[in-house]
Structures are given as C-alpha cells and as structure tokens.
Amino acid sequence: MKIAILGASAGVGLETVNQALARGHQVTTLSRRVESLPEHPALTKVQGSSLVADDVRQAIAGADAILVTLGTGSNTQPTTLYTDSAKVLLQVLGETGATPPVIVVTGFGAGASWDYNGPVVKLLFRWLLKDVYADKSAMERMIVAAYPRWEMVRPGRLTPGPATGRYRVLDELKLGMRVGAISRADVAHFLVAQAETPDRLGTYPALTN
Image 1 (tube, one colour):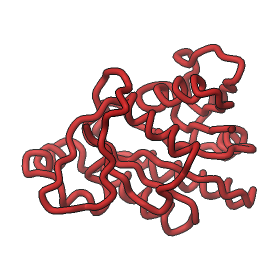
Image 2 (image 1 turned 120 degrees about the vertical axis):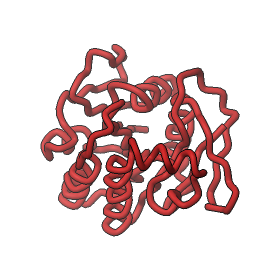
Image 3 (image 1 turned 135 degrees about the vertical axis):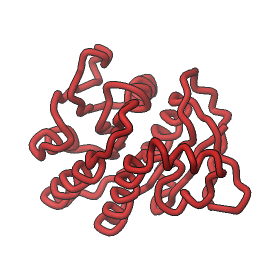
C-alpha cells in the first residue's frame, strides 16, 4: 500500500518511515529536511512544509493512508503548527475528494485525556507544555469536526529504544488509568499497523508500556 507520512525527518515520523519500508510499503514523506531519511527505492521524499498546500498535495497524492507525525521537538513555546497544518491538510483533502484514513499523533494530555493525567504530570504540562497541547487539542477538534475517517493516537512520554510490540492500547478514558512511557519505535509500530488495518477509526487510543 501507499503511505504518506507528514513530519518524517525525526522522532516518531522517522521511525514510522523505516518500519513502513521494512514492511514493504510505498512511502511518501513530507518534511523540511530530508538528510536524515534513508535511501530506499520505495521511498519518495518531498522536501517542503505541511503549511504549504502544494507540498501537502504532492505528498498525499494517491495515498491509501495518511500518518501525521508532526512535532516541535524540545521547543515548548506557543505554536500554531498543528492547527495550521490541519487546515492545509483538510483543504487539500477537500479538493481531491479522497478520504483515506488520517491517523494523527498528538499525545496523552490532549483533549479530554488531560483530566486523566496524574498531578505531577499536570503540573509539568502547566509549566512547560500547556500551549503546545492547547494547539494539539485544537487540531484534534478541527479534524474530527471536518473529516469522516480519523484516528487520534495519544502516546505517553516518548522514549528512545527499539520496537518491542509489547505495549498497551487503551481505548477508553478511566479514572486511575496510568499512561506512562513508550518508545517512539513502538508508537511507529502501532501507526503502521493502523495504516494497514485501520480498525480504530473514530477513536482516541492511548499508548503506553
């Protein structure tokens, strides 16, 4: 199948590229930098921005699934990257009329999941990540309201390390639930599996070890 990955040059995005290629998929990436991406005959690299409609249009053309793995790295300053990118993606999808699954990585703490974090994590978010997660939450709402085939993936704290396949997928928000660390590689494993078999559309799965 053909998978488009928006935000692919580092972190979860880069892990997802490598795993999708290893599983035999055709992959098209969109990222500002392409130096970190592997050389592979099944990989098409689009160097550009998720904020530019022509770049997004080129990246998602003919895609069977779209994975959105955008991130701001260690930058905790207020941002509109997530909502601005969502506007562009929805615009392009509306123009094409195509409705591939759109699987978006946000984070546990976005949307309603905020209320299910522990007090220490809430304090950390208030000091460091409040504005970033406000934009992630707004992106979730925007896509859910405008697009029929979506999935919002909310991993816990991202860590380095290999894909183990031994992680938990929590489909419901429950009092006392614990969402801790998970490797970027395991998040990528889940994303590729969902691209192949999107059986959680319309849900907000949380990922944790």
